[in-house]
Image 1 (tube, helix red, strand yellow):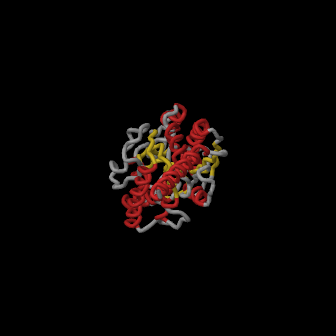
Image 2 (image 1 turned 120 degrees about the vertical axis):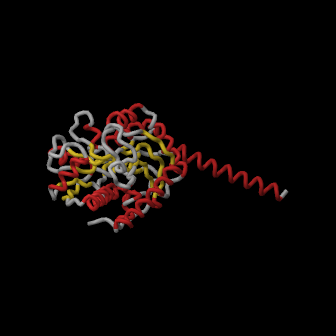
Image 3 (image 1 turned 90 degrees about the vertical axis):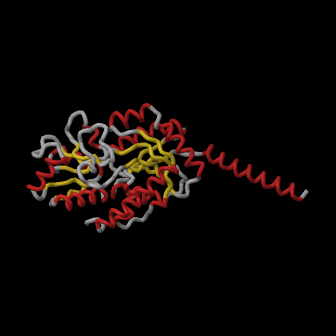
Length: 321
């Protein structure tokens, strides 16, 4: 009799906790959500995020408001997310995984990779080194190198610490003396490149908006493969640099977000990757592949990348300030 009592109690508890998980999933979201973009308005991350928000709110049944919190290559938005306690109602759409995997090794940050959960990755980033139209060195990497060697002080637009260490690596290897111009996101970089005020620079995806006009030629692909819209531009490896800066966009929530809420967000994100509006803005307008990678796999990808960047920084002696 006693054994049966404990068995019944255990079964009841199991069902109760299972019911609680289902209840949490059914109750989420219980209020409007906030999608935080860690870059300024107008860049490729922001443009994509606004369409994503519209698609998500239809699936989740609550408004999804987009808020821009630019600063430090996306680190400001992640720092603020650490202190958020609304259980997944606020999440960051990280435009570059390097903010999570590179920044904590490059300099002091208030967060680490283990401080968050990674709901899913939904886009492969097509980032690049770009220039403007009708430059004196043309639109090839070889032409840029020749010009920069002959013209010390040639300007380069940098957006964050990761692209800065990349260009420092290239400067050291090629014997270049460049003038580094800090910018804030694609919206800050684009006017400088298009006007000719800066010779070349890093782009996280803004260049794709100029694929048809040719106003922002790509000099180098920073993905392991050549870019979809700029197949003539060589990869870093093809240009002779033993580096892989492959990147992806990931949805980030606080560490304490309940499993049921993460699962519900993941379901909505996977549905968004099949929505024609999200596919159109991503693959046809900003020209990045749509790829859904679930929490477990994307978390491992981030851990692997983090270790690779740690080793790179050790070899380079840290970021040059």
